[in-house]
Image 1 (cartoon, helix red, strand yellow):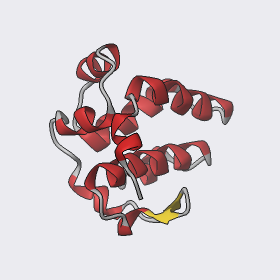
Image 2 (cartoon, one colour; image 1 turned 90 degrees about the vertical axis):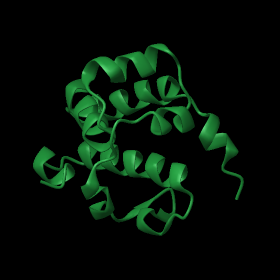
Image 3 (cartoon, one colour; image 1 turned 60 degrees about the vertical axis):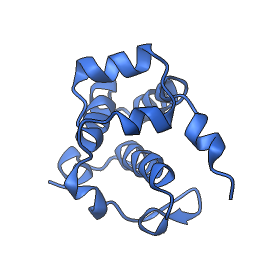
Image 4 (cartoon, one colour; image 1 turned 180 degrees about the horizontal axis):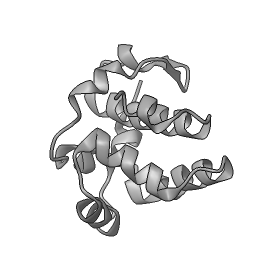
Length: 116
């Protein structure tokens, strides 16, 4: 599979879709941001900087302060693939994020989403 398309996707292009998906189900932008910050170690200011700079996912994850150690607890299927079995590091991180946003939209409590 050619993953270069995923590498080049801009976080700023996908981010509004994450928010729309969450808000359509009664969740908030703040919850989306909390999920992204939990997974990557960014704070609100540095996340906004990444969005403003229109960085692609490869750059976004390469510059992430610290990927959360509990990310390995994120399991399940997203886009037809088990996230825990994805071998490409960047693609797996993108799918982790997709999975967490899906869980938010499905009404899961934040404590469960953040593997607390």
